[in-house]
Image (cartoon, rainbow, N blue to C red; front, side, top):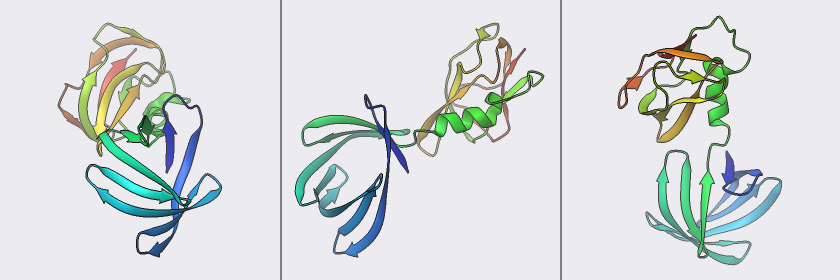
Length: 170
């Protein structure tokens, strides 16, 4: 899974390579393997040894695709799904879409958290149209082309299915 720390341009890949038992793991961060021992873990945070060095992380907030934590007294924001917005944008017609396509369609099911546009608004390709929440992640749905919003097909707090029309853009 890709992770991205706010204010740092690079993302990194983190995964468990081997479970050694007794809360000991071999993990891989990018191409480097590390030894991880979980000392204590609960709903407030985790204490662990990473390559024999003690660390303590406290969970502040975990909603949508971002996690706010404090590690060794340093606050950090981590985006756990760095490419999710781009995937939704591509599959909603944003990458190479025909200008003949009128309706912007949802490529994921979800709950409408917010609507960023109104009927009659002029939008550019890539502008945020609305935000959906799906699987505890908030995803921006972006315009698939330049144009004028002629109708909005959704309402806040409503749910949409994959393929449902979100807005008409001419």
